[in-house]
Length: 125
Image: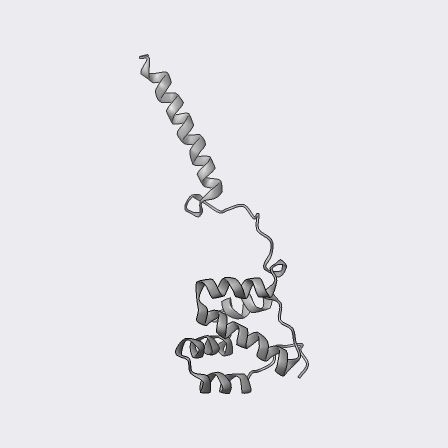
């Protein structure tokens, strides 16, 4: 065995150790460990603030949707409810319409959608 063999073995071991570290931190190498808090733990204002940074129209439409549900249905939405409304299927049609109206600055469509807003199940109207 040459003197390079131990050095090569050391480099391979180091590379494998690095791969396991990558596997714990990169989605390209597998699932990340669950270290974040559930969506319910994030305050709604913080979630809306993150939306504002990513997509201002999404934040505007979501804020309008949350306010409309509060006013029309007397229901304070949680962060988890808003996330479900955005993510289930193609998204809640009213919420998606409000986001689209915000993007297009279409106040007539926004007002129509708010006026026709169906209340979520279990909320008082």
